[in-house]
Image 1: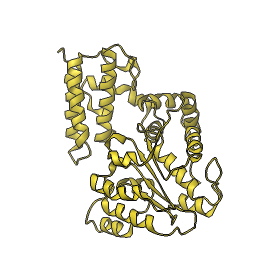
Image 2: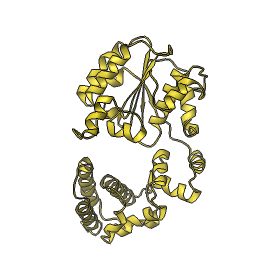
Image 3: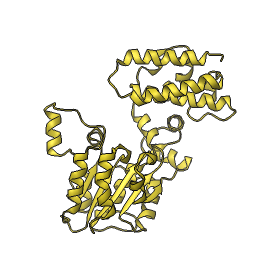
Image 4: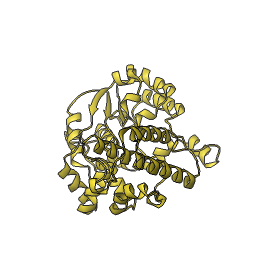
Length: 332
């Protein structure tokens, strides 16, 4: 068995299992548990002794899902995501990566989707039907999505789909229209704090990481497990204003850009009289004008689109911090 399911995921699982439908689209901002809820649904669909509350957690089917070997479950993810979450790659794909013929894909490959479509046509191995889990669904390109579309339109009788996404607007409208939609619920603060405490996160740290994550529990837990201290997060704004690159030195480039985008957001909020979301107000420098902040936000959005590229990280961090310092000291 894996970790205990968060109470807000369990409540949504129960609500969705009470409804009928061959395809669900779970959508909402990152960090709200789309993948966890999707996995709970397929566990319950395939379970030998399911209840209205979900899978039994004890049967051979549940064990098969836990150890990533269930014959009636097809998981479609970018190969990077599958490796990170412990799902095995198809033998051919693993061989190509092992032989260094290519790197793991960051998209859901059309070859994997074609395999999934073929999987959907086969007879269930255990007689409980089949399930296809797609996450994050926005990582399907148009070719891959179109390969799924016909099967979603005319699904075989014993297969169900769950697509989970943090960017539903990026999916083809035809994909969205063929699924029952479910907007992920935002948990109550006390529930998130109790859950993080159950994961071994001290209350002060939980509060700080929840702020840093914008109130998103999965992201807060990832921050807590990253080894980064809450104090280090709080020091970023004023350190960046001084041009101190070391404040971001323990972050990779995508994380550094994300931190600067959160800083920019909070300074814009302050400038227009709203409350900051990601940093405590006392930890923020005085905001410059709306014009410089808006230009900086556009620059950071552009940087975010290429942050995964293999740049020289040290030079990129210096450039990002110089850009931030210039903005924060701008008068116009």
